[in-house]
Amino acid sequence: MELKVYKIDGSESTKTVKLNEEIFNVEPNDHAIWLDVKQYLANQRQGTHDTLEKSTISGSTRKLKRQKGTGGARAGSIKSPTIRGGATAFGPHPRDYSFKLNKKIKKLARFSALSYKAKEGKITVVEDFAFDAPKTKAYIQILKNLNLTDPKTLVLVNDTNNNVYISSRNVKRTKVIRTQDVNTYDVLNASNLIICENSLPILEAMLR
Image (cartoon, rainbow, N blue to C red; front, side, top):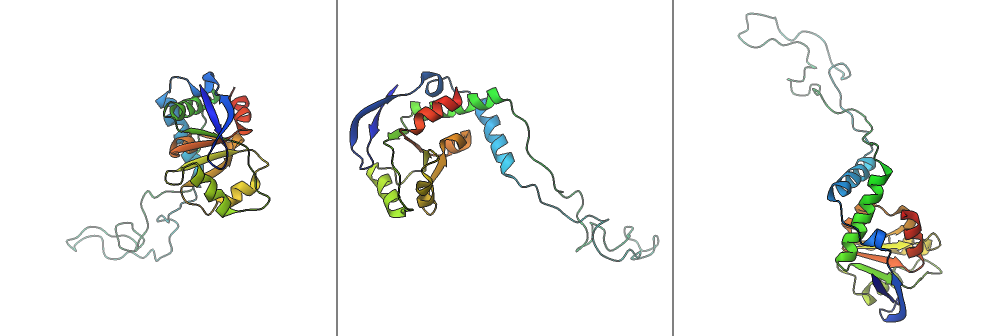
């Protein structure tokens, strides 16, 4: 599959790039995508949630009423989970949500996500660009020139484009990441994928 390379002013250049068929034209595997996205979202969880149970909550342990003869249920301490203001029964505690996933599954998931974007025609290759200093207006203007301001946009850049990343932080519905950090979730969460021309060889070399 060949794609035209666009300039940052929105016009077409005379250059074209050929997408690797082994990466951008595979039969998508939805189950591999599901597993990879599940792992990605699980890794984002801090797992610091905690609740106070009967043994950790503060309060008196005095028996509230006599055991029999009241006509009601038995009642122990005021820390009981059945009493308002009492402890939490079977509440969550700190834990690690991450889990292991085979590297081949993760690679297949990324191939599948990129292939979906290629088949939908949602990949745009742009000539290399960089800013001398963070310029949010200049970044927004590039998106306008490419007619990609409304949908969610993911931009893949190399390490040298740190100012591009800083320029995009205050812009809604757009995200700039390093090519080395591309993941299945971000690719599928974006409506359009913008790849800088010098990032494409890095992406293909990384996923081979």
